[in-house]
Length: 317
Image (cartoon, rainbow, N blue to C red; front, top):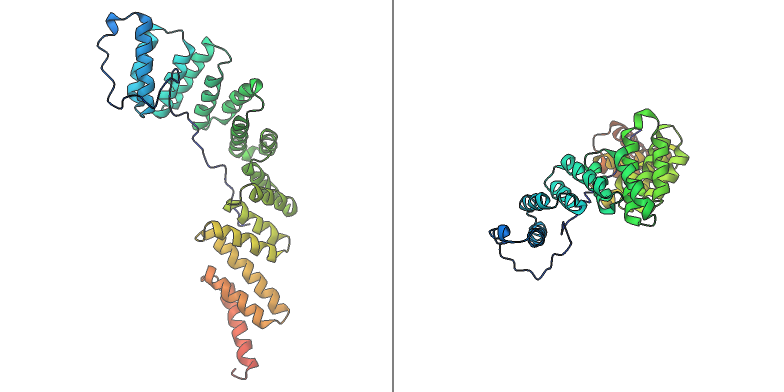
């Protein structure tokens, strides 16, 4: 069966902006921050405030390597601050070092159990490494103190769905997709993946329901439209399949898989018209099918048959 089997498109939800105290102001001078020449003459408290201010400023400008260096200086002065370890982890995430970032978030949580920002950041860093099971645990922990957080619930649904795709060969994925919908009932990708499971188990009616729900939630979901068309064809509903493929092609007219499926669907409709001896309608469907796939031998065979019949009917054969 010609259908797509894909997971969620990855969304990088790493935090942007201030790292330490969220004290960055848009009114700060845009000139480069001064070098740290006077820290030795300052008290620790003054030095920490100055270094964190500059680290925040650098982070807002996307200079995470320089910000990380300053955060490390602050940690030399105040190594037991959970927010500093969290800020250090954020810098590392932006520098593409998710594994090292996780260690920072874990240190923040050791120092301050229940640190919500560190829990969420750890979950994101784990997800960036496709460590879905661990990310799910972090998100569930964070939701215990903030169960109504819609953004976290969607992220939990995403991680559960990706984990299900990862475990698909083990047969344990269906429950994870259902768990994803428990976390966020409007998560289209989980509906799509349940549809794929039903399609593979030759349950087109059930698959159709899941694909239909997926495109209802995300009208631009081309894979779900394509698979909805496949399910409709398998149910003997080529007209509905045609509608689904048309919607998929509105999203991406050049999708090869959808164009091939559209051609097959139009071929089926053309053959149905031939059986009903409606040569004009058959001709219309088959001509259109060739515009979507000019290399399908079955379409050409039936198109030639229609042309031959037309010639015979006009006395030209």
